[in-house]
Figure 1: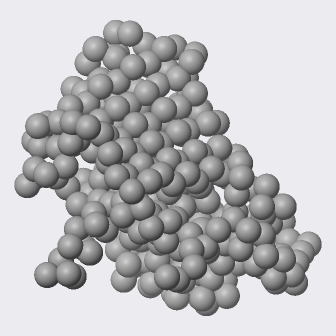
Figure 2: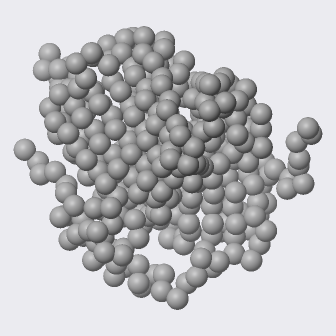
Length: 130
Length: 192
């Protein structure tokens, strides 16, 4: 039978991770990192936000981009889910709608890396009418 | 909602919004009544009595951004379609418990989905919240507690990509070991 991973194994492998982190992230403060918030309320989850978030976490790691990916609640754009808010250091946050894995890839390659704006941005002054 | 894992992610999100710092998730596949039960308990703000009465009404929500709340109604519908049920207990200032049951052999039982992925997603996105996840099956029990994980990590961030991957594998391997989430059905299929 293959051996099952345990917390003891985690204890062993974490030092390796720690040494990599100190090389890469020392001296950085959160404002210097790309911040991504994936809307994860019922509407977001039901339209595939989890797949988008999994993809982005993996992609940032593989492509060597220093980014924090977190989840947030519903921003009121249920019609456009999954929505993703991207804050590139020094810029205003931008909310993208209708994000699937393909769109997320485009956001990383074009918006985050090169600063090119894409289709599907939700205007910040949008408000619901009561 | 496509699967049980996404339901868990969705309902736990309510606990996070309610300001909980301790969330317990207990999945039991070993109940004598043949029901799969998913129990989520938090120490968040709790739900007022009036609201609790109509909490599975889709037009009830505490949000300001929209007027509908589909999370609990959808879960209740999915549970009841299999002959199961949804019960919620809550006390203001103490927290909320959601207990949902699905008939394990019913054709309408949603697939399990990516349980380990959902747990890790919540754990990594909310490092300040303590998560305790217990999964019981016929073959045994697996417990994943972020307090123990953090102790083992000794300050290495839990949202690090390699740590996430390790933890996900660890949960998967342990769930497989106790035949949780239909892995026993898998084995049966393979033997045929």
